[in-house]
Image 1 (cartoon, rainbow, N blue to C red):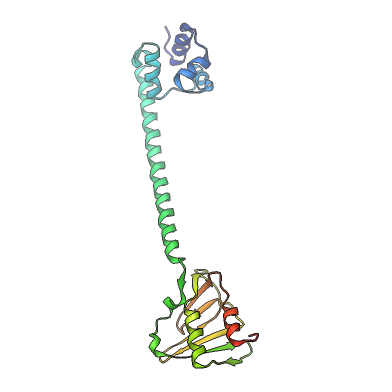
Image 2: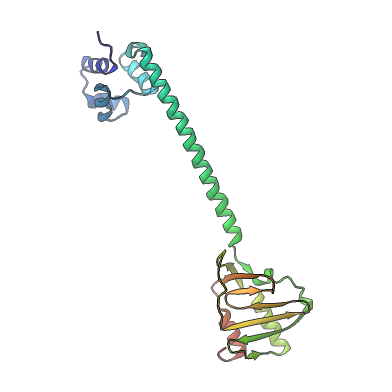
Length: 216
């Protein structure tokens, strides 16, 4: 009498004149899996056992002992539990990626420099350009407003969350009645905090140079 599932499976397969490859195709598994089962190195899961019982017209109880069947159920439960944990972890990772992408999209969305200048335009006093050797360039009233508007309409994106102050060959000084803004190619400083950025396909140096008419 055959007590082992491996012996029963081999006997049933041979009684139907099936090769290991034939049986593997019917059960949608690999031939290597059939070899493993017939060598008593593992068991099918519950679903595959159901397929085997239907194929050979036997109940699952006739294929396995109660102890073997309980062991398979326990292994299947562990696999399902592990799968659930993996799914939960993957969902958590995916959620984090989506939230991060949305957050970065909001943070790094291009914005005009005007959104970082909080002063009322009615309090605007004057604009000057200060170059690296301390030379000051001033403008007439019409040029001041043109340069002022062009600068504030430049779109920028945050360059880094943490960055050391970058040197620039010039600074644009925008004076309001209550506050002064220092702006150049790399950052905007309002005297309290500095916002580092990168102009979107734009050179602030060329803009300023166009108004000055000479190298800064």
